[in-house]
Image 1 (cartoon, rainbow, N blue to C red):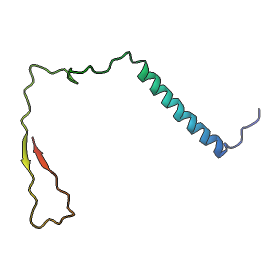
Image 2 (image 1 turned 180 degrees about the vertical axis):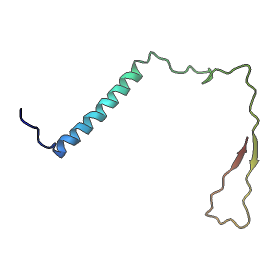
Image 3 (image 1 turned 135 degrees about the horizontal axis):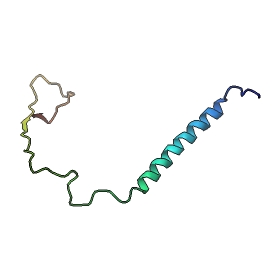
Image 4 (image 1 turned 60 degrees about the vertical axis):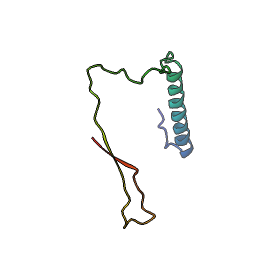
Length: 81
């Protein structure tokens, strides 16, 4: 048996490209053969449970301070749960 020498950089690049191509084709095949299980229009993304209570959310308007420079970013609203 003869030993295989070091792998050339071109071979390494080829292996990477083929690996990425195989991953892409596998994802494409899985997506195309999913049987049309995508969401239908007008239906909620997740089924809602009749037992769950709505979550209370308090929203406060953010007010810029007098000392803030014009370059400071202002978050439009803060959410408190």
